Image 1: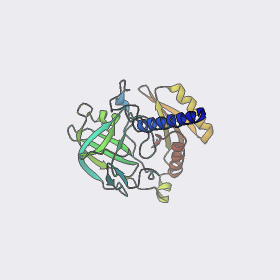
Image 2: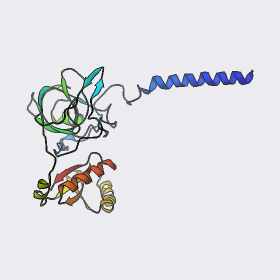
Image 3: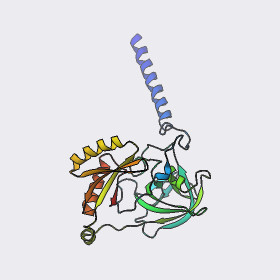
Length: 263
């Protein structure tokens, strides 16, 4: 009888704990219940616009999907896309969590979320209320509000001077870049290409990372400094297609925010 009571108690305990877990898992997806601005943001005036370049579509986030019982289709290309509507922004609640294409959302980068553009895409955003412009890289889905056509990172919203209003009238214009061809590969071979790995105020940390990447990829690392912000870059490479392939490898191996630039 004692053993039966013990078994019964164990079963009840397991069921109760399971119910507690199910009830709390969805609410704990984000560490904050409501979105908010960062408490001590860095100097965002030094943040550069996203650098438009050719990128193959991500493996994640480019299939038809459903949100709030509504179906969404993804455009096959961003070419010729333009739209006017309202922009909002998202901040601390989502900072550090995965975006729809599997990257990590950084509210201090120049990025955005869109319902139908392929991931990633590059978009010029004009604030129609003050004519300020930025270029962002679309790597997420949203916003799922009727009148809003883009959700911007906190940094992009800062540069568009829309933080106080929260929502602004904007115009979106996609910057479409065709995939490199063999001819473009040859014609651009005299240019020097670098991969920007990461930017930080900690120069010593970047120098250590640079030494590791030099031995790993057999390329030189350099740190360029502008107004206290240090940028770690790897290169040079004369062949853009090879540089693009290496960029994809580096992103997959721990530096998803890396991008290609021409010296």
